[in-house]
Length: 164
Image (cartoon, rainbow, N blue to C red):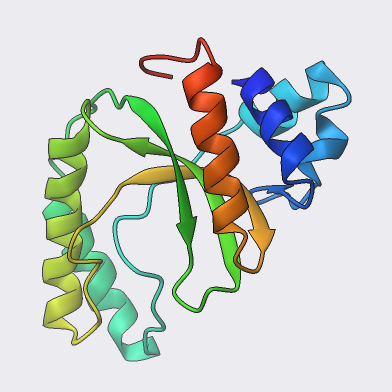
C-alpha cells in the first residue's frame, strides 16, 4: 500500500494525510515515516452524516445510539477497492479504501441504526446509497479527475489485489 500511495502522490502532489494534515509526498520520502504516520494509525468509518445538533438533543441521541448499537459484535472488514470521494460542497477530494464485501452487511446495519436515531431527531439521514470507506488522504478542491485517473492506472498496473 505504501508503494501505491507513493505513486499516487507523485502524480497528485497536493495530497495530505487524513487527520494529521501532513503532505503525503513529504512522508513518501522516508518509508518508515509513511508506514508509521499514514498507515500505522486508527481509522474511522462514518455511520452518519456530520450534522449540527442542539444541546438539548445530545443526551437523547447518545442514549438512543448506545441502545441501538450496544449488542454489536466485532467483525472483520475487507477494504478492497480504492475509491475517490468529494465532499458535498466540493471543497475537498479524498483518496479512500472502500468496503465492498467483508463487513458490509454489519456496517450497513449500523448505518440503518444511526439513520433511525437521526430520523427521530429530524436530522438528515446518511446517503441513500452508502459507500462505507476509510479515507487515507485528501486534497483541497475537486481534483477527482486526476486522482481517479491515477488510481485506475495504478490499480491496473499494480500487483495490488484482494483485501488490504
